[in-house]
Picture 1 (cartoon, helix red, strand yellow):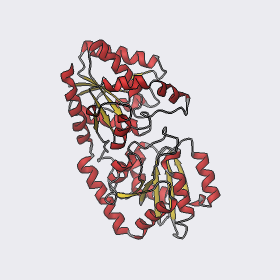
Picture 2: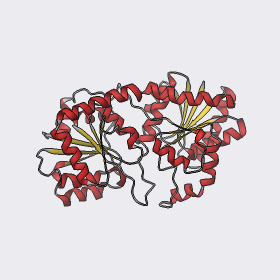
Picture 3: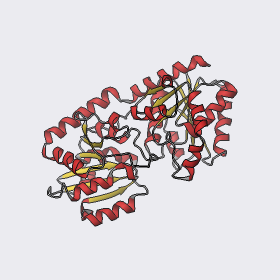
Picture 4: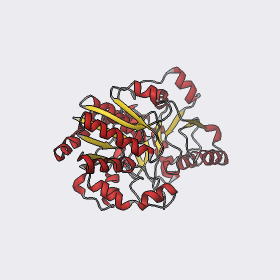
Length: 386
């Protein structure tokens, strides 16, 4: 099979979609011929040179980007033949693939993640996307299949009026060779823990739905009597100044480290240096532009053997098995989050059991090989349409 992956989110860019599509390309390249068409980003040349598949980079500017995608796809299909196109999202990759289907009858598949599916009018970009809802439905309905990252995301696609026969849940996976439950290096231990008795960690973009603020509130109230807690916040985003001010106003600033974007090579050691991974993502009222479609960071933490405290919301329930790999609570309730963290701190055997079960779960069901098998099963089903 000759597979083209079309994406505007790809490593070395940060984010869950970039991670998923990069992992997908690598895993599928061991089973078929893969060509990735992605937008140019800083550091791309070094990253691309390390991959076992071909990467074609195009300009990131709209219209120029789509024209370049189409040009390369036509050339690849004419010279080598393409069996199927995998689109990282419905727009703009799905629009380009729909055009290829009209011109070359090339079947395509579309990934569905979360906030890009719903309609709202919060930002100019989302106004444009929401105004294109009829086109979105057209792209979905003419796809050979839709890969939803979670049951929650599947419901979002169904609400767009798309036939359920087209939608299949294909959960993301994690690189088990990178993320392992090994002890942290001495350097990571001293750099991150700084002598703390208990170390909490969140790895996420600093967006309002990720739950950083509620964790800070729990630290200031429900966990204030437990000495030696350190809270590590890895990531950047629009909420950084707000969160820093909140930590200061709550009096927990000395306990909190804002690490910024941690280099990819340091991420596994960061997870290992922590005791509990905390990310109580929620759905904000009136803000469907912020939803947790799945949460790959949960899988990375589980792969490192860490117990999880997550929010019972969105796709998190597909990424964390409540009572087995972690504890899911009301993401809007600082007391509930504090209770879950306190429970894991005071019952280290429970924390160890959840972390071990998390590692076993991802190793069995959510490894990269299984991701490739599940996705390529969809792709093979699309090929006869050609």
